[in-house]
Image 1 (cartoon, rainbow, N blue to C red):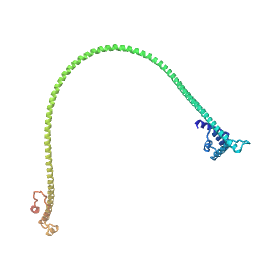
Image 2: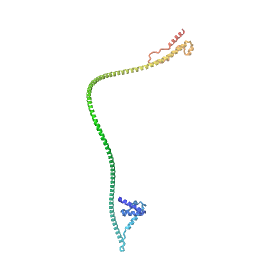
Image 3: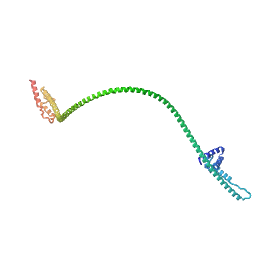
Length: 362
């Protein structure tokens, strides 16, 4: 089916729905519509899809009744008293066949006519659609041309306004050009006068430049001579500087060697100083020990000179002057490297004490 047939079928079904509110009657009318008007064989599914009422059993039952009624109505009965029953039935079947073929032929002609009409209608619809499209294009073009015309009118008014403004500006420019021409003529005259003065000044400047160039050449010659002399002097000074640098390098090398020798001597002197300082410390310790021994001996001599008894001397630990000799054994050992000999401190303190005693008695 074409889209137009579907549309017509839907419209007819909507009309039948309004005319037949009962579901079974509506399904029977739709069966007749499909079979007789559109030449389609109705089915239960097709009927339910078109009507969409009731249950699925309703269109099947209505469709069975429709086919039974159609077969009953299509049967032709020939009743004649002289014909036998079987001949009458055969004649009825023959007539029914002829009617069926005639109906089929008529239906084919109807279908052809309907197809031709549908084709003509489709062609007419196409022409109408084309005419509508052409009308729409014409209207669109007309609207565009109208809009363009309005825009052109606005543009013309703008151009006329701009032309008036340009005309006024042109008159102002003409006046300005006249004024500028007058000023240009005056400036040309002034320029001619300035050119004449400039030519005179240029001639003077050329003469001055020539004299200055001559002086410059002479100065350049003198400068070249001075440069040559300066170069010679610089070369001589450079030689002297090179010799001075060499002497300075030699002196610096000698100085470095002398510094290294002095640093070596300083190291040796610091070592010797350390050794001597050790010896001095040892001598100072020995001297302190000897002084302590001398003080002890002097105290013993003083006690002996004051006349203490032997018992008292024994109690005080000063029995005789020689008792101080063992103190000499506590003298510290000699420091290695000390060359001089330490004096014996036992006898001289006794003699010194005796002399002091005699001097006291005298």
